[in-house]
Image (cartoon, rainbow, N blue to C red; front, side, top):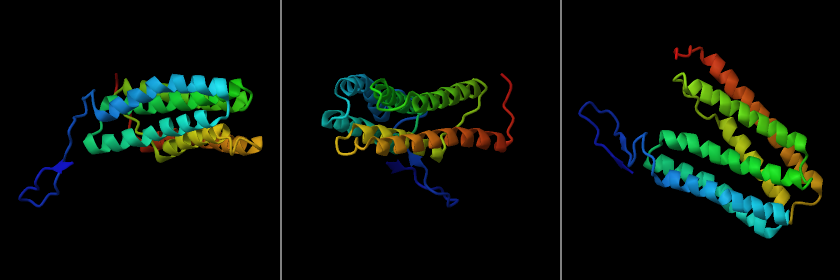
Length: 200
């Protein structure tokens, strides 16, 4: 990443990113789109195999790409399209994996419904706020809940940790707690900001 030279006033150098906020075809976005494209085939494997090395390795590889596109975005410059697509890809992968395991009666549907309801509610709230010109950035607790969801599915898929079943269930319910807490934290932070939303 190159930087612009600092001015005579002694101000620090400003990073010169490869892409501006409105860019679409960036390396980070391409990785995100690849995650979308590979999620359905992976969910098909999970539905067919259940806990297996094939499903677990695929899950670890695809889940790890979240960190890759984040690193690329920080290197090349964040974009509005990336800010929208990246969390959407996370939700698609995580909820898809949870649903696949619930359909096999490995995970309880109640836990999956609680997580999915939170994700839909927060996404709807972000959309509503965005239409009013208010950006709601991701909170660190939101990233933690995504990681916990991915880990819960990974523990249930790995042949070394899928038994006893209480181990994966413990991680799952911890993920449910983090997911609900992150939703409340986002709303609390938004209300505590005190900034009124601009009119439509």
